[in-house]
Amino acid sequence: IVEVRGSNRQGLRMDGFQRLFRADGTFVDHVQPGNRPNLDYETDDGHDHWHVQAVARYALVTEDRSSAVTAAPKAGFCLLDTERIEQTGPTAEVYQQFCERRQPEATEVSQGVSPGWRDLYDGDLQFQWLNASWVPPGPYRIRTEIDPDNQILEADENNAPRFTEQIIPIPGHRARPLAIRTDQGRPARIRLRADSFGSPGPRRYRVVSKPRFGSVNRRVGKQFTIPRVIYRPKSGFTGFDSFSYAVTDANSPFPKVPVIATATIWVGPSPAPRVAIGGLATRVRVGAGMQLTSTVGELPGPEVTWSVSGIPGGDAAVGTISPAGVYTPPAAVPDPRVVTIRATSIHNSAAYSERPVKIADAEGLLNALLVISRPRVSLRGRTLVTSAISRAYNGKIRFGARVGARKLRGCVRPVRQFRTQGCRIKVPRGVDPNAVRMVVTVTDGKLVLARRGYGLPR
Image (tube, rainbow, N blue to C red; front, side, top):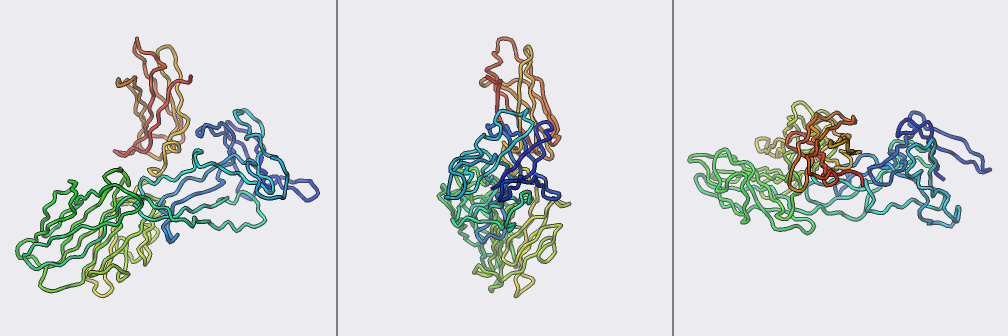
């Protein structure tokens, strides 16, 4: 049996504790040393009841389970008896009061799961998703950790993560690294290649960076549909040159940062070892990761060593990269924000490829319901008084309003994490305040982290 209780309410939070039952029916109240559970009155999911916080943690990980590419904040739930799965324990629900729903002023809360029962959450309930907007297309699994902070005393404390057996494809295209050779002064006709996952739309190609010692017949940043590029080396040039390109889904705006691959060209009279990097995004978020690939000569394979900003294998400050090419960013944004990832041939240290990667804050991975909480609006005379709380670390919070296509004057405030911020918006005469649609947006530079719409309560 798992029973969690809350008391000592302070606003919309209670101190939690676990009630442990003995075989004779007596009980003792217990708190794990240094890990008292918290119960919060949660309105953002529409249920308006008390949640035990940090019950579970979810992450999307690479197919080999070695690295997380995106993670969700620790999830809290209302614990109930929803489905009987074993013949042990009570025959009817014990915990069924829905966690003091619509009782933010409750002085105590009791919730739990009985022996032989489980608390089954339907997939359409709020806060049960992972934001994959930034994740490169490819095969992944979901990792689940229960009681990640060890708040609940258990008979078996081995809370090893569990992984889905089913592979989950993130649909889209990933550009492949290329290694090409051409003779001095001779153009090379290059066919761009990509791996596709799921059921994506048609491929769209674009050159991301141009070669240094030659030219290509495609304009940087301009999309095209035929995967052919002609490279022309400069007169008299011999050696390595390269350009980078991306392949995106014509029917989807995701991933937000496409995967970049390198086309490495050897210009010279005879073959030489050539290194190219694939699977590389120009920006990766703290708490995420990415699987890189390499090509040496004409064949993909592990014939390279990896380094990050000149450090073999990387370190805690710039992020680490495994021999298999799995890059894990540092726990905090480094200074400077840009690191350089290099793949070097193990047979010839002069043969390598390197690319810069920008490390960005983790909040861009969160969805709107987690970044913006408790948007409120009320009417005072002809003035709409609105407020919201941002959970982002930095940036700006923008309050706006519109009636149909007409925009009303709003406000822009610097983000103050977990602090309520507000705005007063005057409603013009002749406009019904109930027809005004409020919009609150959180931005970080040009990046929109979250946007939510709301209006006056009906």
